[in-house]
Length: 297
Image (cartoon, rainbow, N blue to C red):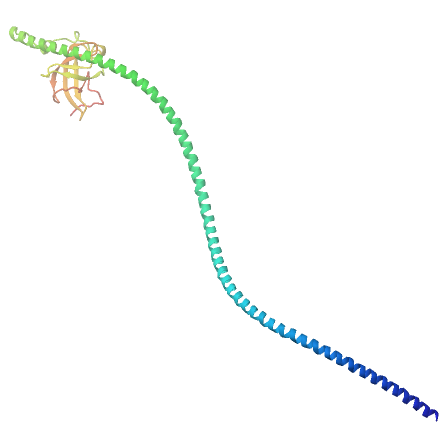
């Protein structure tokens, strides 16, 4: 055998050995692959079962998800409505808050103004309180003065009543005297008072004081004797001439009078001339017509 043949034999042997090895490897691989395939089939069946279960569970989950989405959409709609209501409520609250702030600002202005007015009123009340206290003090003084004046008025009233009673007595006596004198004058033809007083000279009758003014207190029924509020203390003496006038309702000159008798504060006069009417109580009388009284034209 040649060397080449030997090499070929050896190559055949090596190739046989390799083929056998490869066949063994292929067989073993086939066995392993079949086992793996069976194992994979089992696993596939298990995974298929799991997939079927997962699909079933997925469908259930999808149904739950669809229901959840439906419920969620309904809830979203409800929430949207609630949100809209809340937004409206919020806007209303914001508007009310703005109105409240405006009212609060106005109320604050009004409150400040009211506070200022109250302070002014308090000051006025304090001033009125002080004024009231002063009035009370003045009232007390006035009450005291009024009491004193009442006492003085009562005393003056009593004095006036006594004076009037005395004057009435004098007037009555003068009336009696006048009637008696008239009877005697008629019987014995004696001149009357007018003639006697008309014959009195200026040296015998003192002049009347200037600007003396009084009132007519009383007039007898016949109007012959008149009692006036002027007397010896005023400088009035028998025989003097006096003027008479009336102030109301309009200034009126009444005429002249002559003094017949006098006392300290009163006198009895007789009319000499009558111009403006009958002399009445409260008519004015004086030594001359006062400028502010006027004389009737």
